[in-house]
Image (tube, rainbow, N blue to C red; front, side, top):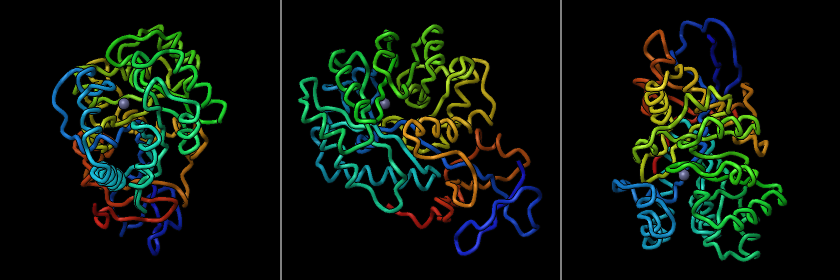
Length: 347
Ligand SMILES: [Zn+2]
């Protein structure tokens, strides 16, 4: 849609439809990006060595967990802060982080936050399968819910217990599912997840069940590519599932949503493809659906909205977004109607 924003003193004063005045700058104005799946805690381990999901990320002996155990607290906090500033500067207003390292991990993320950090939905998890009730209560009391690694990483009774406690507390429960191998959809749905991550190895029947249960799925194409996996974006979209995009592990890919939506568009081509608009929607409205699990934000656009302003050169800005755009083209980030310039944000 053609329109323009009137900006005065770094605040949006009017959202207008129609042809802009001649003095306007040419840009694509999008709802801000929602990064629906991150692990920014392992940003300090970038770049991760090549390996299988098991070797690189599985608890507790994978590369990621070895690095997290050996790194200092301050190094982890610095890396998280840097990741959040990068997210903001590249147009992301909200992210959903799967925090490792139990209660301490949740606390470290809070400490890493600065004024310009995007708003976070923080999903903690217990340190081990032997978690006590007190430990689980403390984690749930200090964040937005629970985000577990693969279903197969944990005893099912622990997952049931954690999910039940999260729901009883009115918080989010989410889990990675069918990333490297197919996991039992009955078990997955029995956990009443608010949303799932990956579903790369899901069968058509599994996807149908998710669509029926209206459970959004977050896909992470660059992370999948790293592990030699193929995200099933077109199958998810065609199954009628709400799909969102996430950048996954900070040690695998920088949390830059423009790079992620370009990857979503590129990898989908092998399976019939998605349109540039669909790719942009995954990064914007798709994530809003995930956040609406806790009714935190809406997708209406007005003078108080969260928006990203991306410079474009040609007549087909959406095609530019999925091919040649980069975070360097982000001219402004608008948060609650206030305009920020990314060049003023330094790590
Ligand atoms: Zn993940």
